[in-house]
Image (tube, rainbow, N blue to C red; front, side, top):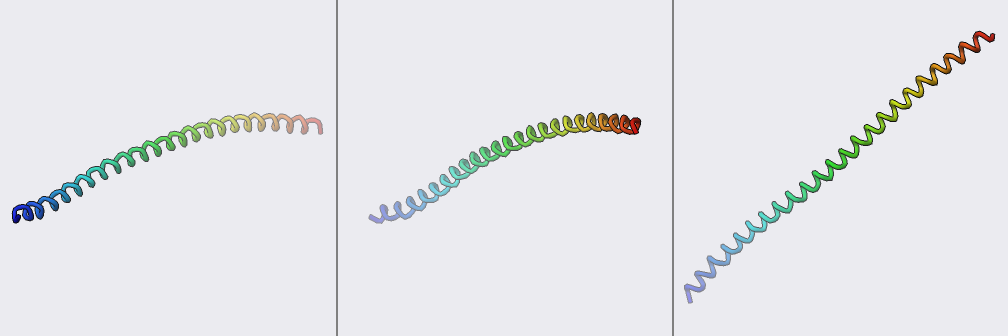
Length: 85
């Protein structure tokens, strides 16, 4: 009888300790997986941002070229108007 109580007194706390460490281990694994998924999501967002920035830079370069062309045309029109006066 005393042996059963003695065994139970040490067995159940030992099992509880093992379960706690196992749960911590599983929790750490799950947290690592979630962190990895978040990192991949952030990486994807960053790649989209870089692509959008490149498109914006290309659009600005195109607009700058058009503005320079318009400026040269306006200069030509001003020159013609001065000659007409």
